[in-house]
Image 1: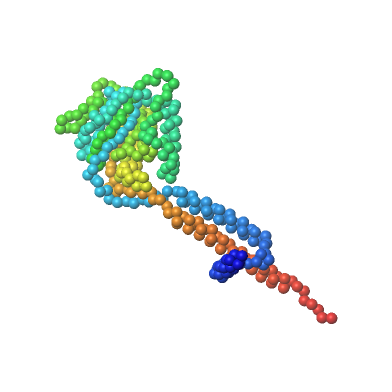
Image 2: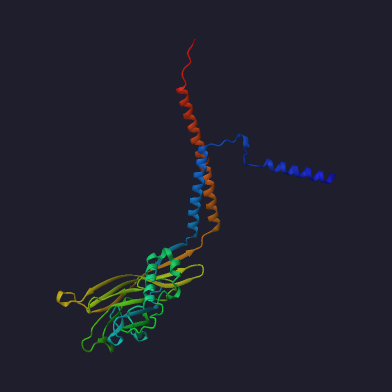
Length: 358
């Protein structure tokens, strides 16, 4: 029994010591008063805390993307032009080639494959292109939507014609061509492409040919494609009103490196401008009907890095928001209450009638 009492005394002494180092003042409940104004300030305080915490959480969940730019150090390297296009003409009536800045035929166009396909899309393919265009419209701010496309973002879904026979009236040209990182152009013109020793190439056409350069670009990339990433010309669809029509695309290619926690890849993003016009020599609009993609490489490379955000900094900001609003609201409540009491006191003094002597 004595030991238990001794232990109890030591416990009380320890509690007293802890109380003495308490740095937080305590106010008895009997000294605390409440009013409607204080309740309004408290309500505003909690609403402000909720809104700011919501903003902080949203900011923390967004990826922290940093952009850097430097001179491209790999100007002498090679890459591939990856193309998947469908032109509304028979394959034996058109030819594809790649020329460099000096007009020299790069060759290797035999690596491209040709196959007859229907130009008109099935309903499920139209829906796919509509979805693809909608996702492209959201841009990089909604990259998670692009991830939904997965590895099918560069090609159409399989046709579903429900057993209906569809005429194959178009030519699909697809494949990859290795090129140097110099200015050049990829073009598709009427007539089969024929190599001429020492002179490059020519497009030979026999007889009158009804041209129709309406086309669809299912995919056009430079270098390795990153699954789920959208490119500027993916899913683009153009219709030629007449047989003599020229489609020219001016492509500015930017070497881009993406760095994330799980990914470190080199790719090539690009921007595009286009010029579409009818060929009419009588009105002075000269040229050749066809599809021409003129490309040029930027000497500046972009580095896109996604960094993880620090949990410690996030929690510190959250605590700062809560503590700051509570402290500020308490000070604001005190200032307004004291000012209100002071003004009311002055008003009462001016309105009390003076006493008269008997």
